[in-house]
Image 1: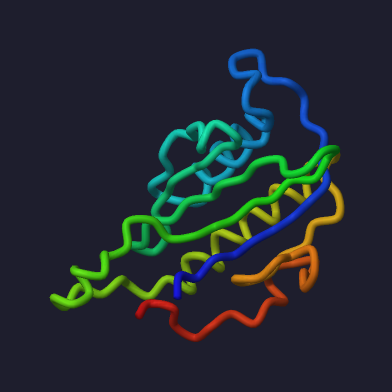
Image 2: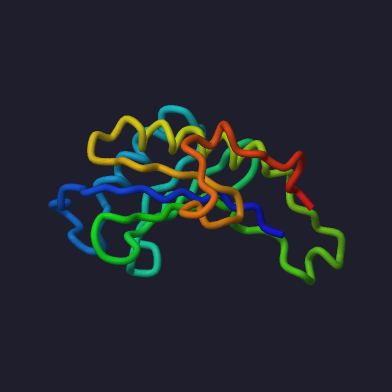
Length: 152
């Protein structure tokens, strides 16, 4: 199973002067800028499925990305952090194995949480692993029960 950290939050962001669609470019810029100060490889943020934003990066030799978008009406947003570029089924049959990724996703979740908590317009942050954070969310990724190794 693919390990995924999910977060929901309430927020209202200013409209970006360069990209007014989709909403949230303001946060994408903030996340990218912060991650560049703590990670060696951070790619430029990009439009994700024309409804949100993604920031690909490398954490502890694992390619992962942060993606987020508004969901429903109002100020509700959802964010997820997951590995990208994992071996396909055929690749796994021929022995390719993904690197352990729990530590990478956990580290990235903690950094993203730091950004969300320091943003004055963000509130009601809830985190979960592979579950709906609206139902089982906790206020910080540090309190989640992270799997020992999600590399297989």
